[in-house]
Each structure stands twice: as structure tokens, then as C-alpha cells.
Image: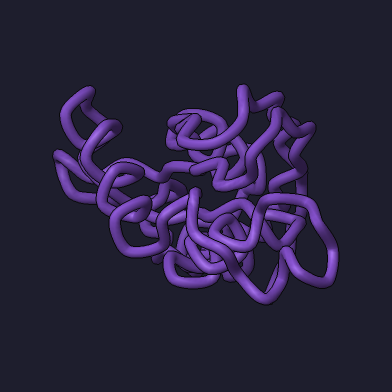
Length: 139
């Protein structure tokens, strides 16, 4: 079984900023020479999330808005009482979505639905330089 690993560098604009990672992840999978297996996509850091969604403007607004309803940015969190960094909600949002996903690989590409794209969501309150690690494993 072969393993290939690469990284995607992202500059985010801060809270609610979403990036479509489908093309760079697909490029990494294609460059891995792995035909069948899995691709694991992982955000390094505790306030960013990775997932799949139909990456279109409505859902780019809806997903972060619903997360803000679930974990409001203006609420007081125990995390902020300790660190005073204003991002308690950011940690909860990112944890709820997950820092990583695994997608099957077939014919040398991620197997995704027609309206399914891989995204990164910045949950933190300020712009960040993010690293997304992409690991492809298979034959």
C-alpha cells in the first residue's frame, strides 16, 4: 500500500471565510499515482474545519450563520474567561464540524457527488494562515 502526503496553504479572512479545496485535493490525489484508496484532508489547528457541501453562495452563507446560531460569537464562554481571546465559539464550531474528513479514491480521483465539494471553513475571529494536510493512501 502506497502513501503520498502534501499540504495546501490557505490565507483566510477570518470568521466565516470558506474555501473550496476540491481542485487542490484532486490535484494531489492525481499526482499521488494512487488509483484506489482513501484521501484524508486535515486542517492543522483547533479553530478551522473541513467537510463536504455543495459549495455555492447560499450554503456559504447558511452554514456559518447556523453555526453562529448554535454557538453565538457574542456569548461568554469558559474558554474566554481563561484566555480572553474572544474565540470560544470558534473552537466549538470547528469541533462540531470536524478538523478532517476522509473521502474514497477511485480511478485516481476523489469520489464525490456532482454537487459535493470539499471545503475549509475558518471559524476563528481573525485571519489565519492555515495548513491543510492531504494524505492519500492506497494502491
